[in-house]
Image 1 (cartoon, rainbow, N blue to C red):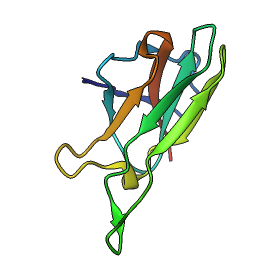
Image 2 (tube, rainbow, N blue to C red):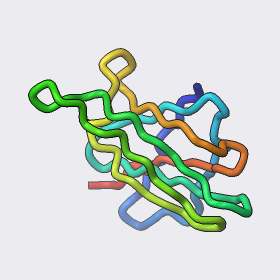
Image 3 (cartoon, rainbow, N blue to C red):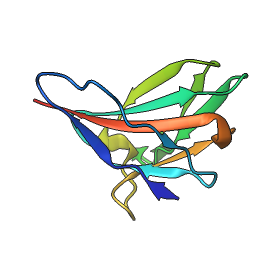
Length: 110
């Protein structure tokens, strides 16, 4: 698993997002307020990025988030602390077609 570093978005804006290739074995990303995961599909078919949700509510597991991204599209999900792994402190993300996925995490200025 690769760790995706957050890119800071200044108040004046970010002119260019630096995209990274999704790792075949999945990625880890920071979680918390002001963080946004972007998944870009550069392939010809759709792909699904799954974000693990390791928490429970009264012992009932919270379902993982499966984000389907159409060919040529970009999807976004806030990196809430509900995704924080107790062992790493980061979110765990997997892809059904990692070769077609590019990822970035943005940290929005507050």
